[in-house]
Length: 134
Length: 124
Image 1 (cartoon, helix red, strand yellow):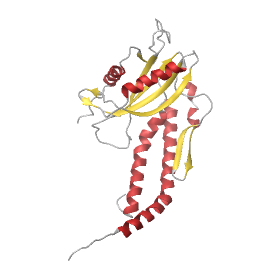
Image 2 (cartoon, chains in turn purple, green):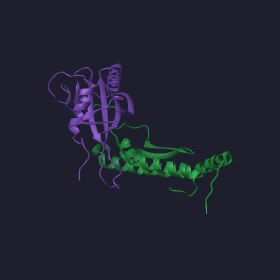
Image 3 (cartoon, helix red, strand yellow):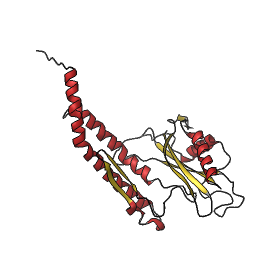
């Protein structure tokens, strides 16, 4: 019995980082200069998190395709910078196909997003969530 | 022996007219059941996913009908937002996850309802 191809989350993460094609894409908590990390924080940066969408657990059988959910947080020093970060992310990923493990995904579709908000340290950030099947 | 079936524009008109009453009659129940299920699923996910700060967050997830064929579920506005645009941790995707569970079943029930308007009592 085989399982769905392209299940390695790290490969998907790398593919999306390549797609974003910007220098400052980090995992949560790994931004230099923030969260106790050494270095200077970049004014505008992106935080990436990825999860596999679950299917209804009551159904059995084997999956050829899995759904993925990409959450990109755009962070900036001002609301406009955060909005700009989200715009750049959206333009980079929306409607493109991701290739992982020789499997090409469906075009990346927007799922939901939230408005830009201020956090306790004075940074502004907003969220855009995309989804695709691969 | 032979079977002859015929239908005309009158039959279609009749089906369409009856269809809307079937949707009006059965649609609200389907929406309500799925909103209730979505609320329960989302609350379950929120309960399991919450850390010590968000133990009671699931109580803010409620569902209600917003129209005859329209309902919604989700966290009530107000209070401290949980996992929205903040950079401190991975975002909260409880709602999207709940929709992953509820969405396909809802879609199936709605298309069965539409089928039924043309094939009463047919395959469901």
